[in-house]
Image (tube, rainbow, N blue to C red; front, side, top):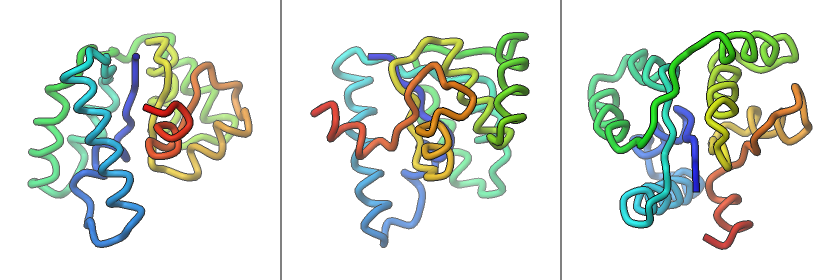
Length: 147
């Protein structure tokens, strides 16, 4: 299994856990990360994910997320394909980071890009920009795939 976690997923683990949805998504992400360590799943990261994590104004969050990023199996560099594809995705309505994450995930041919960003997931589910990989919420994806 090849997965891509966007910054929303990585950040979810350090979000305030008082809301049920956040706790449920955090638990799903933790199960996914256990599968990366135990079951040989491949977590594909990217330069853009590292850049977004580094842009956090919260030093504690940034430090914890750097530790998590060390678990990633592969790193996608920002190359011509990613840049051109992201430009197109932005032109059809994706935000800059979402477009870069989707383009990076596509270049790595992952099985799924996971996000907790409802707008990102909805836009991709509608087929905006003809996504080449599914974009799913980690909780619903785990339920659907029974993982």
